[in-house]
Structures are given as structure tokens and as C-alpha cells.
Image (cartoon, rainbow, N blue to C red):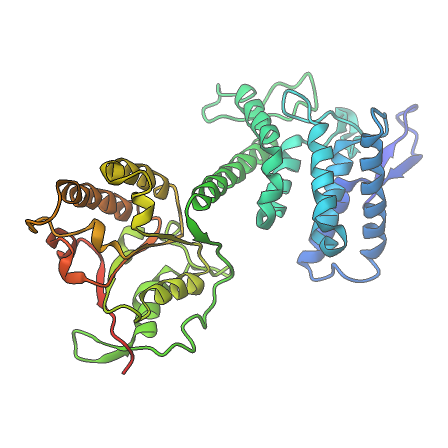
Length: 418
């Protein structure tokens, strides 16, 4: 059970020791075994059984009120063990209960009370768990289930405030110490590293949270694992390249638009914001052609190929408060879209909002809207964080400034399959 020998109180020369299992050491021991491909088998099984029992025990101790045997770190690390190695058995309800119990034990100042030491540093004193090491582990392990942390946001904010209050800035960049040893006021490299790890993960969590809120305000579809066969099974039209060579539309999108977004390294996947030079990548385009040729379908398949979320906007989004306020609503919509990262955005059937300004029959509001939308589209392109498409059935009615080469990275005339 990854127990550690802690000398008993009394004679410092007494070699007798007692071994106490601890969730912190068990979590890291099992993580090491997993990295070596040995997380299954008889060796790990006793630790997993002990961890499950200790998790239930700690939840019960906290639920029944203050008890000196309750230990937030034992609870937190055993929750992580069961989440990582016993997820199906644990279930969402127990994870939520464990998180709620854990954060309810957080002190007002943003950390948890020290309890059992994990080992003793000879003559230097006992070593305890550090709150930010637990927080970093929680954010890292629950990355695919960050929605479970939404009810705990106030507590994450408290930890952020602790880091701000306790930063040691006299050494240059902010550094931290764990405060294990009261008499020692110097920063510690490992404690500083854990706080920085938490800050980085917390920033990623906040970015995910903001983007989730933004996507929920529009018609959107969640991202999933990249699908290399997203274009398979479609009756695809051929596109004639400038060289005169024909190419299937799906192959063209895959080769010229999507594969350049692949991120290096064993993790794989696709990203625009993590690209070395995102502004050098194609990220905006116009799809035009007759109704029913699959413009919307190809944008959906592009999102599936990348594994990115998809956000769809049509003129009704901009006209929800009436024609006179379209420009105001558009400013609000684009301010939200600029928060998105690695998302496919489709502006569908947008010819009504980008109508040519040379048409004498066009209204003042319509011409003003076209004028106001162009810089917003340019700002979205300059942000270089999302891939966005404008789909239209009537390319000829779109304003010349929208059609101009350079306004979008590509223009594709999509016709029915031959």
C-alpha cells in the first residue's frame, strides 16, 4: 500500500518504526506502475482495494462531522486513485460526492489543513502534502471531465488567491514555499513548480470554461476524437485545381486545409492555436454553390475530421433583436466568438448579411451591416484561433469587398457530384 516508515515519537535513536499507508504515496506508486505497463495484476490489487476502502472511510468521517481521523489529502489522493484506475466502478455520483466533500474541507485561505505526515526529513522535521500538488493532480487527472469541477470553482479561486498573497517576489519571478518548516522563509523549487503547474492548468481550465459558456449560447456540437474517415462515404464532387488537375473535394480539404493543422509529437491531434505559425495556416474560406450540394455537410465533416467543436450561426442569430440592432448584436456575437479556440465556425446562408452595397435597392441598415461585418471577420481571421467558413447559395450577390482575393484564405465553388 505504498506505506512509509515514520519513526515513533520518543527516543530519536529508536529504530522501531510503524508503517502507515498514505494515498499520496500510493497514487504516485500506482502511476509509476501504470507508466511501466504494470498497473494490472496482483501487485497493484491490494493497493486498489485499500484505496477504495480508505476513500469510503474518509468520506464517512467528513460527512459525520469533525473527526481527528479525517484527512483531506487521504480523501483527495484516494479519490484520484479510484478515478484513474477504477473509473467504471466509481461512477459520476461518487466522484461528485468526493469532490464536494474534499472542497468543503478547504480552509478559507485556500489550502487544506495538514494532517498525517508522509515521511520525516531526519533532523529537519516531518514532510506533509502540499495543497497545490493535490490541486494540480486533480486538474490534470480530471481533464476529460472538467465539468465535474464547475461546482468547485469558488474553491479553485481561493487557491489562486492564496498563491497571489503568498508569492515571494523579492527574488525576481514569483516563487513559493510550502510552509512545512516555520523557521525557513526561503522559497522552494518543488513548491514553486507545483504552484506554477496549478496556475497553468487553472488557466487552461478557465479557457475551457469560457469556451463552453460561449458555445452554449449558440447552436453547437461538441468535439470528439479526430475521425480520419470523416469524408468516407460521401458522393464527392471534383474540384479542378489551378494546374488543371481534378481532385475530390474531401481530399482537397484534408490535404490543403486540415492536415497542416496536425500537431507534432506522440499525442497527435490537430490545433491551430498550438501551431508554430497559426497565421501562416489557411483558416477562413467561402463555400458557394447551388442549394443541396453539401456545403454544410462538408463543414461538419471537417470538424469531425479534426475532432473540434462546431458552432453554427445563421442570419437569425444576428437579427434576434430586430433589424435596427443587427450591428449591435453582431458586435456582441463576435466578441464571444473571439474567445473560442480550435473550433470550427460556420456562418450559414450569410448572403443576406453581406449583400452588395452597390445595389440601389438595398436598405441603409443592410449596407451598414455589410460594412460593420467585414472588419469583424478580419479580426476573427487575425486572431488565428479558429477555422471558419462562410456558406452561401448566391455568391454573386455578396459584396465585392467580401469576394476580394485575400479577404478569405480560399474560395470553393461546390457543385453536385458528376
